[in-house]
Length: 315
Image (cartoon, rainbow, N blue to C red; front, side, top):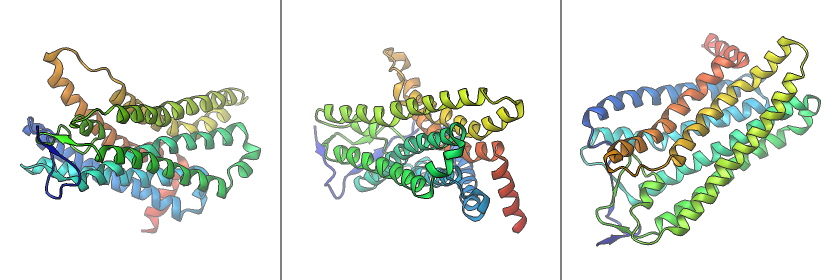
C-alpha cells in the first residue's frame, strides 16, 4: 500500500463529507450558512458591548467576551471549509491546510473547556465570597486566567497536531469527515497509533473530566449558598447570574461527551447510520453551540440586554 507523508508538496487529503447524501448537502449548506451569519453577528455584538459599555468591565463579561471571540475563531476555522465542500465536486485540502485547520479547531475547543471552568470559579467567588470578590478577582488575576486558558488550549493542540502530522498515511488519503477532524485523520495512519490514542486519552481527562468535576464542585457550593439566602427574590437574583453559564456548560460538555464517549456499534447494518451521526454530532457541536452562546447570554442577562439596546440606540 502506498504511503504519503505530510512533507509531500503535492499530495493532500480528500474530504468525504456528505458525498453520499447530495440532498442533505444542499439543505445543510443553507442552514449552516445562516447559522454562521448568526454566530458572527451575535458574538460580534457581545464583544462590542463588553468593550464599549463600562458597566460590563467586570471579570464575568471579560470572560464572556473571550468566549465570543473564541467561538468566532473556532467556527471560522471550519465552517468556510464545510460550506465549500458542499459546493465543490472535488473536496480536497492540502496537508498544510489540513494541519492548520486541525490545530485551530483543537486549540479553540481546548481553550473553551478551560475557559468555562474559569468562568465557574468566577461565579463561585462572586456568590460564595462576595466581599472578597474585588480582591480575589482583580484585573491582573482574571486576565491571567484568560491568558492561561488560551495557552493551555494552544499547547495541547501543538502536541496533538505535531504527533498527527508525523504519521505516514495510507491509500487515497480520504478523510471520512467534513473537516480535518483529528480522530478521522488518525484512522488513515499506516503505523501503530498507540501513543496518539494515549495522549488523546490524557487530553480528554484534562479538558473534559477535570473541568467538569471542577465546575460541578463549584456549583455544589454555589447552590448550597443560594439556598441559604432567606428571600425568594435574592435566590432568584443569585441564580440568574449563573443560569446562562450553566446552560452553556450543559450544551457544550453534553455534546462533547456524546461525540467522544458514545460506544461504537457492532452491528454492520447500523454502520451507515452511525457514520452519519459521527459527522453530524461534531457539526452540531461546532455550529449550533457557538450560535446559542450569545443568544443564551442575551436572553438571560439584563445587563447584556441593556447594553445591546444602548448600542442599537447609539446607531
